[in-house]
Amino acid sequence: VFTSMREQLYGIGKDAAGSINAESRDTGAPGPAADAADQKERSRLFTFIEKMTGKALGYRDIQEINSWLDDFGAAPETVKQAYRYCRERGTFNTRYVGTIVLDWTGRHLDTAEKVEKYLEENDMRRSALKRVMSYLGFSREPTEKERQLMDYWLDELNCSIDEILDACSKTSGISNPNFNYLDAVLRGKRGGGKNGAGLSRAQVFRYYEKMREEEENEAAARTEEVYGRVPEIREIDKKILELNSDLLTAAINGGADLEAGRERIAELDRKREALLTKNDIPVDYMKPRRRCAICGDTGQKEDGSLCSCFAAVAAEAAGASEA
Image (cartoon, rainbow, N blue to C red; front, side, top):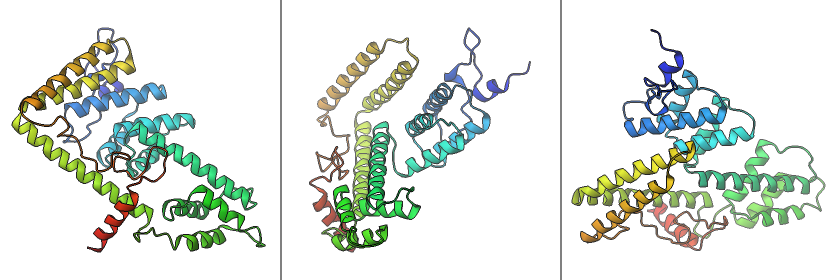
């Protein structure tokens, strides 16, 4: 008996009704490092994509998606957000989706919140660029160089939109207003793009990123320390992770008792805290220790403005670069 191509691609099992069992299907050989949990997560991702696109994934599609996850370290949530984004643009071409996924992965957009914030900021940036073009009397689309200059003013010179538009007003007295003139005005105003510590905003943000990475590594080390002292906590964390995964699947597919799952997780959380307290371990000991409670060591507040810690971190970053 020959199996269909879909069964060969997606799995060895069918349910009683004869439909493909998404939880047991083969996810395209994602690599030797993939464990059972990873296989399960990929299976849910492929199911999500198929529901989103309304068609079964082909073998090449699965290979392409696995390459995003394995070769480029893309998060499954990033892939999901990219498909949602492409749906709004009326295309599900896998290669096109891939360019979005890889771009967002390079920007560390690994959660829905980060993607939404990035898209919101991009919308604001496009709107600001359109206003600048209108101010200068251009009715055409901006060139790539003009887009890069806009990014430079915002990211490197740390200019606000109001400052850029104010610079536009200074072009009223010249015969040929253009981006190069604006660039000269803004560079002069900002002293070439350095802040008080001598670093660009992008350089300081990279330092913030390094800070967070170190904090995450330290938290991981403390977690392993706790697991060594109280092995039961490792098992509880593993169970909570599995339950959260099951809740996500249930929320997508419907028909399950979500409240019971949440209660079970809350019960495990209470047991976990009791074990930590019993062993004289602070309940937040395994979490990353952020230096700034306002921005969480990102350098930006929720409204996108710079955090009050930015100047101090910029000075620290400057000192580190000179060491």
